[in-house]
Image 1 (cartoon, rainbow, N blue to C red):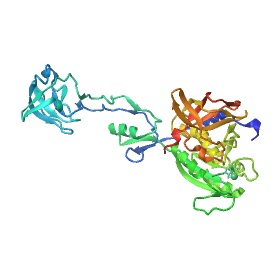
Image 2: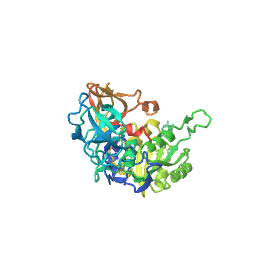
Image 3: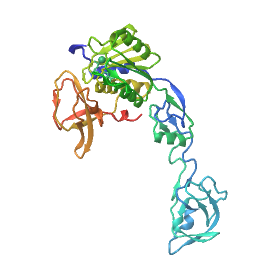
Length: 413
Ligand code: AMP
Ligand code: MG
């Protein structure tokens, strides 16, 4: 990992994308665990929704021509010949001069072609109703197939299932759906200085944050965290933990210990365990020690120990792999924003600047979240996007446009 061998972010992602394969599908019960999963099939409507013409209002099913000319001053009286309630259709067929009481969502009786709202009637007696207006043909009728038509592709494979998708799948009566298997991920953190949440503080020790933030990113990315572990800065302990991390997962993530320090044992362990190195050293700040390789079907990411670097490289490098595994486009959601302040940098490495986005009248603005040190984890709070300033750039001035990658997909599990 020297200055001359640093891999550009785009090349790194290209290598990761070409090493990533879509995972197989599995059947998931709509009512049990489908939320947040990714569809593994195109969903096509097999029948129309709604399945029958029905009323949008409480009122009376009528034949529109019977009421032409009806108004407050010239009411038309119709014979009441039955009732259609939601879930209980009327058996009668509507003939000329007749009305059938109807509730919202109830099936439109045969012969009817409009609904007269209850507010536009005057009750007369049990057997008749007075119409005070003349609804046009089709008025307040929800037509069969207005929502979905048979044969229509409603949802595409690769779609993340949210509340609306669940509802639409239910409207089609789908109790089982095919979802892509969740990528299985392990997260190993390394470092003598790391303290678990329940360990007593001691001099020189810090809280292990990446076990939480990186596992959470994996879950936000649609993966399942199968194992988390921590290893001391010791050759044997690191190798043992890395071996465990590689067991039965699609993606193994190792945080820290991947740099050039004399106590960094991750790379030799990976090598000894047969993980092939694809690249080490990224032309990106934060994130230069990042490492990538694979063993058989398992992709292996060595991420920098610094908590911000670990999160940023997870998003930028592991993110594309997870998307491909889930049958989605590998690329992140990208855009452009106007930098709200000057940002200076030396050439040589790209910078991923954590930014808050603000929509103003003149356009979308990106404002750095504050001090950008790779240890300043609070700089990730409220970050909506990463502004990626190119390697060869010496910075941008306020008002200049910069490419951004949105972070919203990383904020919901
Ligand atoms: P390393 O990449 O192991 O040299 O670690 C770089 C920096 O990140 C050091 O300051 C470590 O203490 C810190 N660090 C490493 N792993 C973690 C972690 N899991 N949580 C918080 N900080 C970490
Ligand atoms: Mg370390």
